[in-house]
Image 1 (cartoon, rainbow, N blue to C red):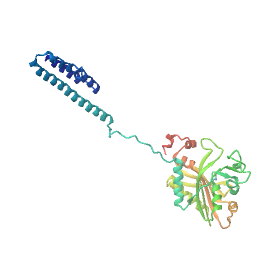
Image 2 (cartoon, rainbow, N blue to C red; image 1 turned 30 degrees about the vertical axis):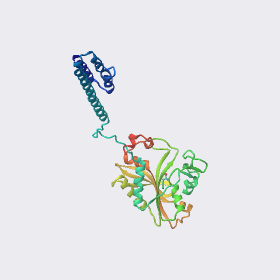
Image 3 (cartoon, protein in one colour; image 1 turned 90 degrees about the horizontal axis):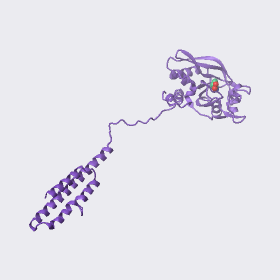
Length: 325
Ligand code: PHE
């Protein structure tokens, strides 16, 4: 009887420290298996006197039950614990800050372009676009720009053939629009233009916006008023414009236009009254029609407005620069 008690105690203490079901199964085999320590006790039955046998048998059976029950209990505990551990691992802390995804925004030049488009659209202008690969007639000849003009030099432009080049300005859109439509006209045309330049204030590819307004009796006052509307909306109500005499083959008179901003005059565009020769080249009667044209550099506008020093920043794709605007 002592032996039975001892075996049960041993079995129970082994079960108590078991940590997984495999260990428990081994304990079961060790004590209750076919050759298990408790099972083997039954074999001693025949060595006992007849009258003690039932009692002994009952004790061994009790011992078996105690051990088996304890194993079952422990198995339940272990599976509970495993479940709990699994759920703890799966648990989500809903108070943890989420990983935020940056969605980005429009490039500063695109923003400026849209801002300008909105301003001109509000004054009745229409946005039109044209090809970046141009022919010399639209880019130069029709714009009264003769052969000897330095802009036509291969040193200054990108030619594919003698007559095909990357447009050097958005002014050929003036020509294309006048040929396609009938006056009166009010258009702006944003787009990329190309020249053989590269330094901190010049890129080989940059962005312009052309403006063309044609009607009867158009004067420099209309031009100046339109530009004043534009600069006060881009640079604020204190901004002023100043026209300085200049020269472009396709305007007469021609002006360089300065904006008063940040306590200085800054040059931001070229402009003028459409040259009668340009009207003749597109079949408009210069005695009936008059108009103004202007061409602004979008990089220039952005540099003045935001104090950007190096024009190359627009194309460097440096996220730290782009995020500022
Ligand atoms: N096309 C000129 C340039 O690129 C700018 C301009 C446009 C001037 C329209 C007058 C009128 O420099």
